[in-house]
Image (tube, rainbow, N blue to C red; front, side):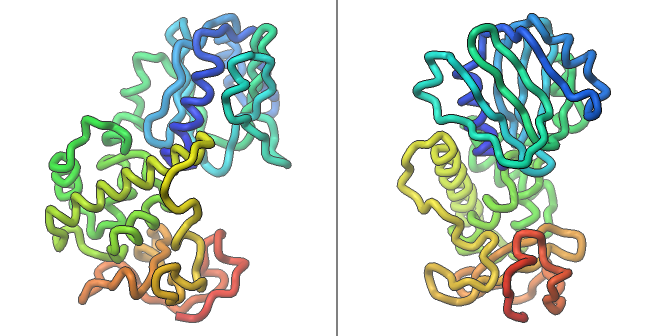
Length: 299
């Protein structure tokens, strides 16, 4: 889950459970050593649920917070008799997911977390100081983040290229690989474009684009219509034709240990001297999980 989806999940859950008391917490004994800490929240009210980038944070009335980060796919399932839930899009559990944590609310149903996230139990006042969160930059939805500040953070981080800059959580948090790829396609930027070569106008357009796409992702996750395309244009589409020009979409890595980037070689013309991608022959073992089962033409 990327930042927009986590923010939507936080807002949906907040509508249902904030200011309500957790009457029971069930944790499988074979999955957690923190049972005592988690169950210590039994009988306490949930003061707030909010997000910071891809972190989902629960604040309880006794000064304890939970911070969850998805390592892979995870989801909350909902069974509720709460009358307010009628206007909230239901959270449907995924088949085959092992239950991780179940919260029961008196006469108001249960919530179950399935999957394998990073799960931290912290003092609320210490959340911002935790090593995993204290280095995070502003959230992509933070209206206080100005274009000039974002551009300055990008240049100060000394990222080799715009692909790495967008994924750097110390610059801006909440941007995942899919949002990065779709942003670069919409902004007509090749993933290997050096940050130093981008003008102020290009950086401004890049930030505006990522915010528009993040907003679209948030509204879709909330079940609301939004006037932007509702399917990936390049992400996880290696070998398929580009919606704009028909050229086969390519996929490559940000160096040997970098993240995969999907892009159109025509709509996103590469810089004259690529500094990022190490051109290696495609083989099925080199491909990311998302495309390993697909027929991908050799580069």
